[in-house]
Image (cartoon, rainbow, N blue to C red; front, side, top):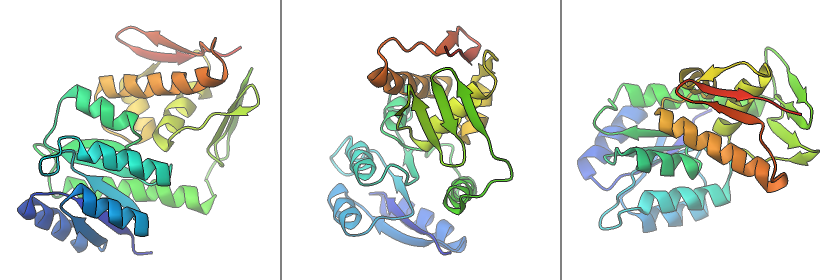
Length: 232
């Protein structure tokens, strides 16, 4: 299968460099330089993966708006931010909107970007196949997780998580009470982000459980070390 990637980057030279590097890997690339162009393209046809700059022209948060729009169209399309904005606040904002990764231009090479995308598509292929080398269901009290279907239930009600949030929760809940460090959660979710970004994912997961159960307290923070799952 030949994957189609949408690249939204307003710098013509960078856009050409990224597009060329990805085309060499066999991907089909649709490149746009503005939020307006990308929105029109998304409404006509969804890509298999989107790479978004945050600042587009005079619009400081255009990429965030595009991400929000894409997530309204599909909860599962991999989205990567590739931007010069490197503050933790921006990274947390991007991940809260549902991006799978947040990369900065100062450290992302033309070799690393295709490798990161390839890893994401391997995850997508596993999800689409419905197959797994191991099957696992987790039940702890009010929690039920179906790994194969990527479904989570709390008090018999569905908890809608992004794929990154699912793998973080799955890693925590597999062995109740075990400490999971930030690095272990990054590895489980197949992302490379800051500790603050992991904390943002944890907050979003808690918020989604609390929409169902305001008294939810299943994820415990261990200051400076990581997180544990406790469920009743």
